[in-house]
Image (cartoon, rainbow, N blue to C red; front, side):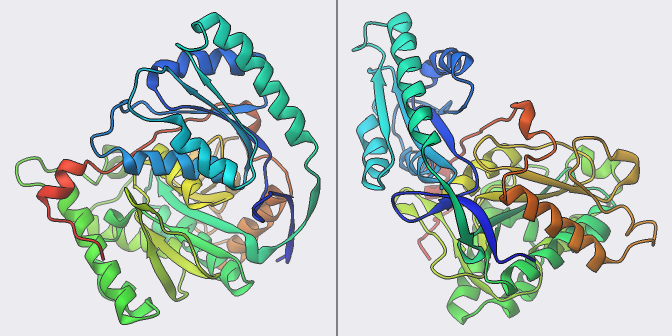
Length: 392
C-alpha cells in the first residue's frame, strides 16, 4: 500500500483528508439556525448537541464536541449557542483557537435573534470556507493516518467475509506505520482472553478487561437489560452473542493492542504512537462516528451486511460480503469470499485500494449525497456512579 496520502496540514501539525467547516450548535435550540446557514453555505457540516444545554455530567459531551472541532478533517468552526444555557461556548472555542484553527462564535440572544444570527452566520461561514480553500494539499506520511474500525448491520456474512477482510487490511495498515482504532467494547464480551494475549503490557490487558466489564454492566443493569443482538442481526442469520462477538473480533486484525482509549469528563485519550488501539467508542453507529471524530480519526472502515452508516466529518468506507445486499451504497464488495471465488487477502487488497483513493480525496459511495448524521453520545454519569466505574 502507499506510504503517503494527500492531506491538509493544520496549524497544530495534524493533517486531514477533508477540509470541512464545522457548524457546532452547542444548544439544541440552535439546530434550526445551523441548518439555515448550511442551506446557503453548503461546504459546511453540522454537529448539534441534542442532549441538554445544562451540565449534569455533560463534561464528557463537551470534550466530544471539542474533539470533533479538533479533528484534522475540520479546517475551522462556527460555534452557535442560544445564550441562556450552562455550556459556555468559550470552553469549546478556546482549545480550537489554541490549536490554531479559525473559530467564530455567535450567541443568538446577544445577536438580536434568529434572522440576524442567520445573516451573520452565513457571512462568517463563507469567510471560514474561503480561508479553508487557501489550505494547500501536500503529501503526508501514512504514519499520521488514524483509521476507525466499526461494524454494524452484521449478518452471517460479516464474520466470514467483511470482518476478516478489514482485519487483514488493518494488519497491513499497522505494518505500514498507520494507526487503527476499533471500539464497541460490548461487542467483545467473551473475547477477553484472546484480547489479553494481544495487549502490549499486563496493565493494558487489565484495563481492557476492566473496560469491557464496565460496558457490560452499563448495558445490563438487572431489570433493564438491553438486547445487544438486534432484530436485524437475527434476521441476517446470527444466532448467538458469542457468534456475533467472535465475528466482530476479526475486524480488529491480529496486531498488538497498544492501549484502550477513553473519552471521559476529564478529557480524551489519544494514540501516543502508531499501532492498533481499542477504545470506548460506542457500538451505536451514529455516536461511534462522533467518537472516532473526537479521537482524531480521518477515515472509518465499516463492515456490514448491507445497512447504512455515514458521518459528515469522517468519511465512512462501507464493506459488505452479502451479495444479495450489495447496493450503490457499498464501497467494497467482498462477497467473493462467500462464493469461494476470492481469498481474504484479495479482499483486503480491495479494501486497501479503496482506502488509498479515499484518503487521497475520492469521495465514498454516498459522501457526495451530503446526507449524514451526528449523534453525540455520553455515558450517563448517574449510572457511572451506580456501577462504581473507577478510572483505570
